[in-house]
Amino acid sequence: MVVFISLLTLFPFVHMNLGDTYLTTGTVETLTGVPSDEGDKLVMLVRLETDQVVRVRIRRSTNYKQGEIVSLKVIEPKYFGTNKYKFNGYVN
Image 1 (tube, rainbow, N blue to C red):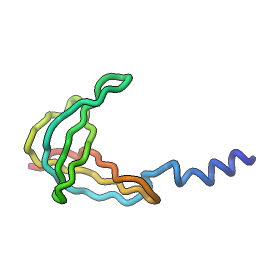
Image 2: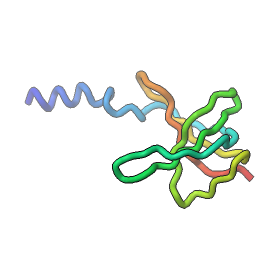
Image 3: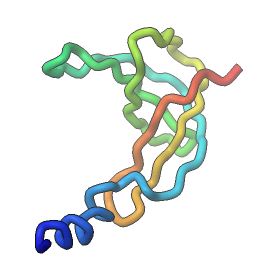
Image 4: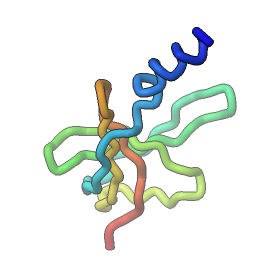
């Protein structure tokens, strides 16, 4: 019973992605790979309109277009932490 109550108390702090989400745009700077146990994970560096550079993971099947404008989904943490960015596609 104590374990169950502890898990319920910690759930909001463990599950960080319950905050607000919105869309933003940025320009693709470069593509890089991050080594992992499963193989390299592709990461695009995107410069936002605020001149901040963020890392965005992409699938291997995604075409890389340097200098193009992309749409990103921003997920703000509800309590603490940093924003997470997800690739939403290229802007035509």
